[in-house]
Length: 120
Image 1 (tube, rainbow, N blue to C red):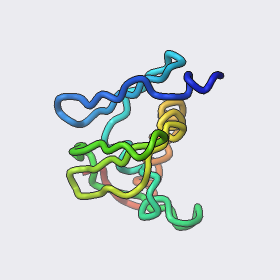
Image 2: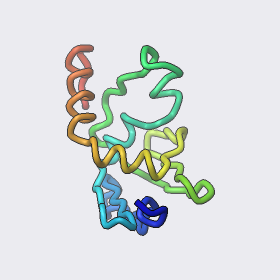
Image 3: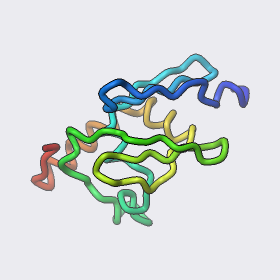
Image 4: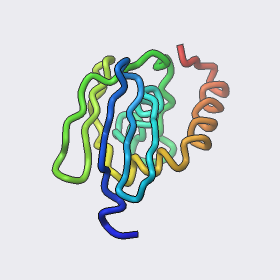
C-alpha cells in the first residue's frame, strides 16, 4: 500500500457529534462511534502502561465529541464532552479500530459484563 493510501482524505463529525467518519486514500472508510473512541482511547489513562493496567470505562453510551485537533500530520487529539482529551489517535490507530471494530466492541461489552459495569 502506498503512503497516500494510508493517509486520511477526510474526517467528518456527524451533526449529533456522536459519530466520526474517517476516509482513507485507499478508499477505505469507517464510521466510528464516539463511545467506541472514548472507551478505546489510546491514552495511558485508559490503556495503562501494560495490558494488566488497561481500564474498562463504563457509562459512556451518550458521550459526544466536542473538538478534533490536528497533531502534526500523523494524528488528532479528540476532546469528548466528559472532558477526556488525552491520547493521540494516529491514522493507523483509526484504521485498526475500523478494521477490528466488531471484535474490539465485543471484547469491551464482555469486559463490562464480567466487571458488572454498564454502558449507561
